[in-house]
Length: 458
Ligand code: ARG
Image 1 (cartoon, protein in one colour):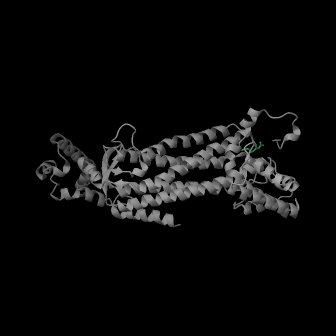
Image 2 (cartoon, helix red, strand yellow):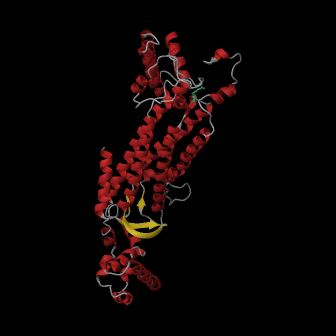
Image 3 (tube, protein in one colour):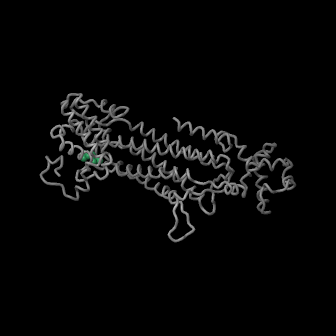
């Protein structure tokens, strides 16, 4: 196929170099955006009298036809074209002749690709936000069901203080709600049209960039033409927001994997989201959660790759920037797939409340509460801390727990102890007394659930 830029060249491009240079195998994903952008551009050219109304009509009808044929499958994208922009223009010219050749007036592929990718990311990020909202709803429902289920809370993966499973789940809901905020912020900053920046310096035609921007749902235009075609900071911002979201999903996955183990048995994932082993008949593996954890690596990698690609580039456009797309597209697809399995995996996860409770009972998870008991009777916290430490050591020596130690023994350590101590260190009390805002007490967890539901209603 003859290149659009063939005029300047005497010889043909080497076949392998041609393949190397081509981006159509991945930028073909943006055909809708490319066509929409061209329609807005042609309409503007007509409105400013740069091309005739007849040409505009032919271009719009031609582009609509191409879009319809691509959607129906009647037309296939020609993978011999260099990129999607050249394919659409060549196909248009094939269909309508000279009018098609007028479309690229006052435009460059540099501003065209900068436009297309913004439109594409806006659309895909809206889809990611929708998937995140579905996951948030699933987590919140699970939390509601489990707001009275007591489990050990951990620090350093050592049993620390009792909490409810609902409270634990809502921690992830808070994180994911901030992820949505980060994505919305990044889209807000990205949502300015670069079209009309042209190759790098703007154009001598009397264009109306704001008209195009408005037609395509942008909040305005980029104010420096070099910046408009040169920066990909919006890709990086979104990719870092995607990476942070993956980090949250990965931590959650790690816990699900741990909780599903024979040692914990806190939860059981549905058969629909686990796999067996080819050799060990007893196995039920949390592959989906492991893959989410594993794929976090590539989403981090994509961010690092594009940061590195951009770091030494002089203004304005350089072909290096074609590398933005595979990186950002891969992060998007990966995140979408992870979210699509995560929400139903959570919704169908069975919770083993008895095992969680038993795990909370075993250790000295109520030691802080015993110290607080003494504090409330007048002992300074540091002294209470020390007394309880000695009691814990005694229990370990006697192979017992705080709940089983006799009152007589307690009194040897402090005469502030009385029989009400047992009630105040029961797991239920430990949880229910944590009434501070954001704590694990029931009212607080209910408030958290309300907050996320209101967030989802907005
Ligand atoms: N395929 C190119 C890209 O993705 C489009 C822009 C090409 N511009 C150019 N001056 N060669 O970046």
